[in-house]
Amino acid sequence: MDEKKIAILIDGDNISQKYASLIKEEADKYGDITLFKLYGSINSPTVRQWMPIMPKYGITPELQLSYANNKSIADQALTIDAMDILYRNIAEVFFLVTSDSDFTKLVYRIKESGKTIVGMGESKTPESLAQACNEFKLLDVLFKAGVVKTKEAEIPVTPVENSTQEIPVESKKIEIPSEKAIVDKIASVLEDEWENLANVGDVIRKSVPGFDVRNYKYSSFSSFVKAHKDIFDVDEKLGPDNIHKVVNIKIRKDSAKAPKSEPASQEKPKTAAKTKQHSDSGKRKPGRNRKKQTKSE
Image (cartoon, rainbow, N blue to C red; front, side, top):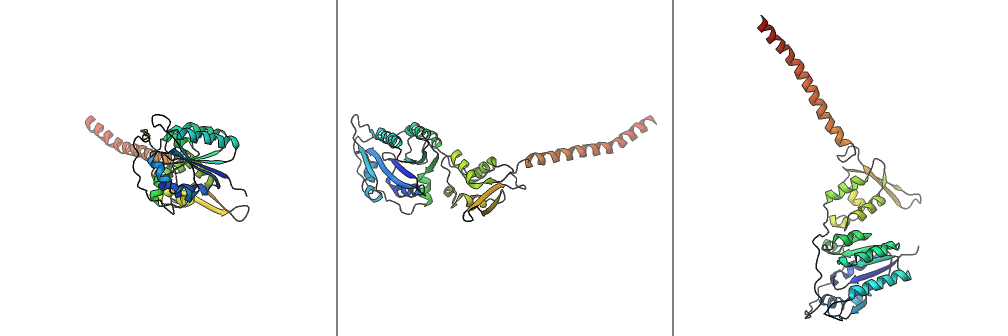
C-alpha cells in the first residue's frame, strides 16, 4: 500500500528547534515525508538555533531577508510555497508548525482542496488556528510528557539588534480539558447502540483542539476508554480479515452517564413524597374528627 506524501512547513521565527525530533516522529506516523522546510528571517535568533540541526533532519532552509523596517517576510514565503505545493498536488497531508493565527486562512484554503492539515504549536496557540486544522498537536505538552525519543538542547545565541519583533499572543488560548471532561465528551457522542471506537476517536480529535491521549498518560485511545469501564462497555473482536481487531464502545446501562438514568432517579423521590403526604393526611383525619366530636359534646 502506498504511503501518503507529507509536507512539513515550519514557521522558524515562531517555533523552537528543541521540537525538531518530536515534529519528525509525529509526521512519520502519517506517511512518507517528502518535503521538510523551515521558513524564517536570516537575522532571527530563533532561526539561528535551527541552523546546526537542519542537516541532521533533512530540513531545507528557506531563509528570508528583511527588506524594510526589519520586517520578516518569512510568513509570506511559507504561504506562497504551501499554495505551490497544493497546486502541484505533490502532498496529501500538510503539517503546519506554528503558533501564529495569521496562518488560519491558509489552513482553510488547504482543507477546501481536500487535503488533510495537521497543526502543531505550543499551548499559546490561538484557538481559531487550532480549530481550523483537522488535528492539532500541542508541542510543549507532548515534549514535557517525554513522548519524544531524542530532545535537542537549547543552543546559546547572541541576540541580534533590531531583530524581528515578537509576535503578539491573543488572549484566548487553547485549554487542555481535564480527563473527566473528555470522558463526558465521549459519553455525549454515544447512543444506546454500539459505536466503532475509531470513529468516536475521530469525533473527539476534531472537536477538542489539542486532544491527545498522551496528555493524560495513556498510550492509545483504546487504553483511555478501557480505563473508564465504570462508564463504558468495550467489545473487541477480530475483523472480517481475521487479523485486525475491531473495537466497539457504548455507555454502560448502569453508568451514571447512561441516557435516561437521570430522569428516572428524579421521578422516584417525587412519587415517594406524594405517597408519604397521602398516608400522613390519612392518619391525621381521624384525630381532627375526634376533636370536633368533643366540642359538640
